[in-house]
Image (tube, rainbow, N blue to C red; front, side, top):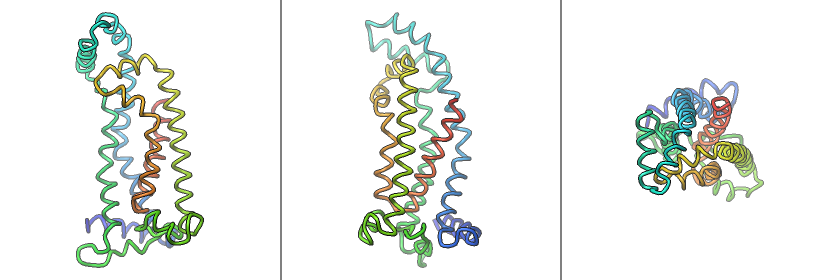
Length: 236
C-alpha cells in the first residue's frame, strides 16, 4: 500500500505545476487511463469474441430447431458449441474483473488517516473544493447539495448519468438489432437474467459515486467514460 501511495504522491508532484491543488486528482485520472491501457488488449479480445458469438447464431438456430422441445438438451448443445468454437459467453466480464484491484487500492488508500505509521498526506489533496478522502455525505454536511464540495459531486453525477444513458441507449439498440444472438446467449443458464439487466448496469455507478471516497469516484467515473468510448471504437 505504501508503495502505491508513493507512486500517486510522486505523480501528483509532477502534475502540481499544471493542476495545482487538484494535482492528485489528475494523477488518479492518469493512473486510471494507464490501467485501462493495460486492460485494452483484453477488451479487444472481448470484441472479437462477441463477433465470433454473432457468427455462431446460424448454428444456434439449427440447434434450436433440432432440440426446441427439450430446453435442457438445447442449453447443453449451445454450451458445447461455444466450447468447440472456443468462444466463451462470459468473456466480456474479464476486463472488468481485472480492474477491481486498482479500484480497491484507491478505496483503501483514501480511507485511512495513516499509512505505514505516518499521516496520510494524500487526504489533504482536493478536486477543486472537495477533499479526495471525503464522501458525498461529507459534502452534504458541509454546504449542502449546492455548496462548494457538493457542486463537485453534482458535476460527477451529471457525467455518470450522461455516460449511463449513452450506454443504456446503445445497449438497447444492440440487443434489438441482435435479437437472435441474444436468444442464443440467453439459452445458457443464468444469461437470460443478465441480458435483461444489462442496459441498466451503468446506472449502478451512481450508487458507487454516492458512497465511496472521492478518489475512488474519480477512478470509477474515468473508467466508465473510457469504457463507453472504447466500445464505440471497438464495436463499430
